[in-house]
Image (cartoon, rainbow, N blue to C red; front, side, top):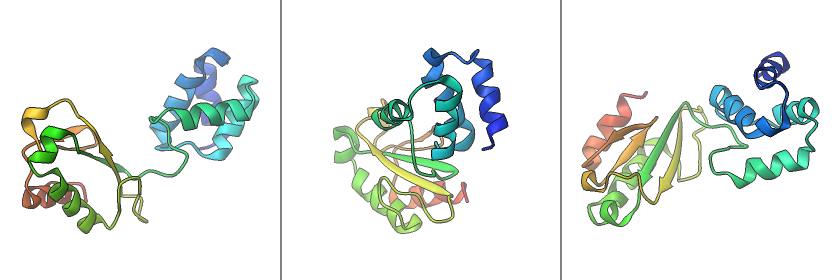
Length: 150
């Protein structure tokens, strides 16, 4: 992401330091992560210490300081999903992508995370890809769902 685009996002918020989180969210939305160079530019333009920005970026789970894949996979490991086979779904995703929770594949195609609840317990086990919910998943259905994102 170039400095001109970062400046546009900052200018949209009138260069207000109080808009820091919104600025970071917009940068991440476009870039899928927050590169060090982008944080430095935001620090300079908003007159906010870089250490403060890094603290915020590491505190909130919504932010990533490492590259993310084009497709974000979330596997629910909450109680309802767990008892219905969430581990098998997770194992299938790990086998097919070669990554573990918290990782991104080398092609930057997939990032994998586990979550405690996606709010649709009756559909367990649940897998979410790019915000789209896939419920009552079996290992075979998991493999089929992933093929659609290749």
